[in-house]
Image (cartoon, rainbow, N blue to C red):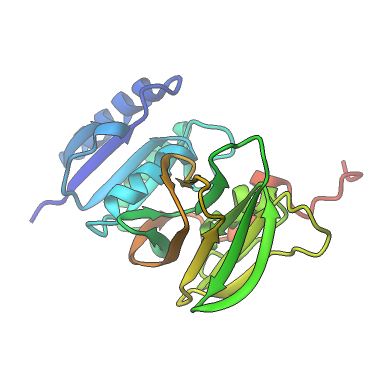
Length: 263
């Protein structure tokens, strides 16, 4: 049976439409079947999906395609493009490798809270974003600690290089089966990030009569009161990889471990 491919692109990003048309033309020369979708209106069951845009576009597509276990590959038109595997000038080679099955798939764990899933993280803050708020942390029903902070980041290993890293959290191997909890600007000198087993149930309890909000992958926002539970999802992102050297990506994208005096 012939495979069906999807091209998902973010039309709000400069040059995304042109790259989408070029990719469609290349796929057409190979005679494969494909569908094209705006990133905000994905509606397909396909065997493989090309995502044109930045990391935000990949995160959005990941939450959709996790439901069908469809492999996704990002073509970066954004800034860092940490989740992407290719640039727009590499389309010919990328398509050839995908059609020849010359790539690997890495299953990335996701988080869930209620009906919402996230590949990177859930960020919990007070609804009054200009003020610090009180949080209590429980793991597997046991009290851990109280925080007074601007918020908490509950992150997957994939998300460890996103908001969690910027807030002082650790960089984790994306194959790690763990979850990190990172306070944002805590009002104490002894609050540190925590790394827990991915099977842990993480519960955040908040001050009564105060409103809080949760942001999934920096995109989906919802409010809650009293408490929220976050745990590992039964769904995974199937990330197609052309470059399996994670540490070279860290060096290239984040200039990690680069001697600033070296020329």
